[in-house]
Image (cartoon, rainbow, N blue to C red):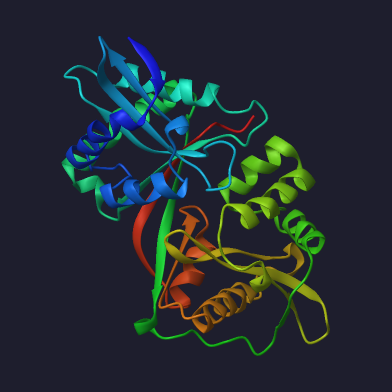
Length: 312
């Protein structure tokens, strides 16, 4: 068996595998056709394992249109009739080995319905992919609640006790550093453990500008009536539409309900740009954020399972 990048001649096979194996794979046929043109999927980022010239397995990685390397796997496919875990593990490791050694650690994301555990087909499709990810080093599993706001739900009350102002990148680096203290967000904790607070903050600011496609001018710092800095709010967009990019309350001001003010401001700012749907994620363990979404007229509609390397 050998591993190689996909090429134009593989497109018919790739599209057939996508159509035949949709369960738990993020890739859809429409998404693939769009992203192979936009650069979010590329032949140099996708690999097949073949035997005697016949494709046995496929891994499709996703990255930003302007990125030099992919960030996460969007689909694993298998055309054989034996255990897929060994070949998927080989494909994942091969993809990792073809990224720069100092690149941000990659992840594997699954987008699942809220009741996925009661769906035998989903459980059966997920299990070998999780095993392959673990064999390649992704042993940390984080489940994130996915929330959605729709225009028909109505806007939450806008804050009357905070004012919101734009700021430069350095101000947001400082804010990311400060809110990372005691954060309940698993990804934030991993980044701080890997890089330290300042480098993790700089990486976050860079990622929110490059991996998301929202307007940088939407970012806001929040101040109270005494001009005390309370927190920050980042409304944004990804390729699927408007999102709650990030929000954070400084440690000394937590417990005062400011999280609701920040979320309401993000929702209003995005609605003012014409958004009729806004999506957001939060970790299962981040109960304060989950409750804030529910108070802010967002509804839980799905789960995102993230496989990643464990904290060092």
